[in-house]
Amino acid sequence: MTKDVMIERNEPYCEERAEGSAAASSREPGAVWLKTRVRNYWAKRAEDFQAQRLRELRSPLRDRWYAEMMKYLPMGRELRILDLGTGTGFFAFLLSEKGNFVTGIDLTEEMIRTCRNTGNAGRFPCDGCGDP
Image (cartoon, rainbow, N blue to C red):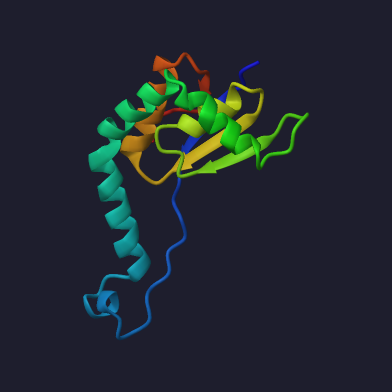
């Protein structure tokens, strides 16, 4: 039984770098600088990464990924899982189709959109995939 996957946008807490660091000298807090770089990187890669993950969902890699994850998860009961940095939702959808309730969050609006598209392409229920 496949469970719904809830997708949300993450707004992490940010700290400033110590005075004297490269980011502090440019008047941009370190965590904000890093957050911006990560967001920009994944925004540019979102479509290509989604295409890669869709191919994997339709290939033998799907079962290999699931088998690898199951080595680390308790068996015999439904789990509530938080997928931080869910990206295209690949792992969230794999885990949800095995009966787990998965909430995926991501920093990048483009990745939230690709997650919604991946859910539609794979016919996975996606609850809460509203606009990022």
